[in-house]
Image (cartoon, rainbow, N blue to C red; front, side, top):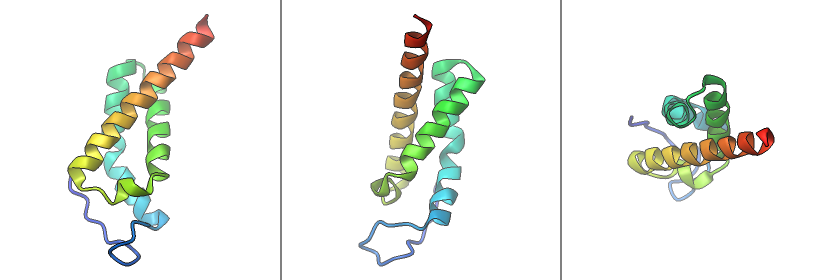
Length: 95
């Protein structure tokens, strides 16, 4: 899942322009959804959890500077975390 990315700024700076962020996030969209669906077993909930995961990653400047393997691991962790939060909210509303 190697995503080559040229930073729009100097090499020591981790800022990435929005179009580049969107391109990189698209490469991780399926993984986030797969993790969320595996945990939630419901399409709408998984899509919502994946959407929140991608939004959180979008705002994490450090994530874009990580190597691919670290980015993938963090994306999976975030997807699990957001899926658990979604499940927790759903259960608390059901009570």
